[in-house]
Length: 177
Image (tube, rainbow, N blue to C red):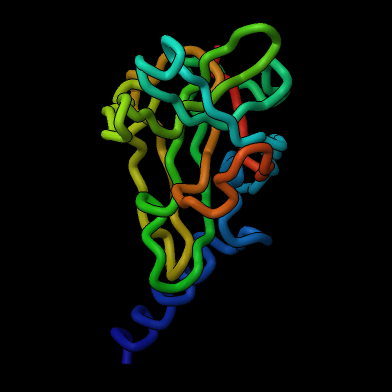
């Protein structure tokens, strides 16, 4: 009998350990002091940038027309995020965290790069290798690596939907000082 009561008690504690649910699927939230908070949702325009008149290849980017996010964190106290995804979706494959290049009051997030002739090139550095930990079905904790540098960042959907010149999507932005 004692084991049944103890098991039921532990089950109830595990259910309430993460009692807040993110309102929207696919939108990251800040997880701090056992409370969810919204992050900056910025409109990003799909864009391409040719290098060397196209002979040097083409970069594919999302551009936000402000140079800095209002949501700031320090390098010493990196944020923890929570994201809700639909059943059967791996958040590490559905979303990527990218570091921006800031120039002329714009944040540009490099999504892909192609050499002349259409061969894909490695974009490497701007992608952050976050750790995704399952909290419960469809809800994941996202932590940044300790070596994350200062700069402007965004959660960007890892899909080709909306990828045509001039199209805009919403991305979730934050900055680290």
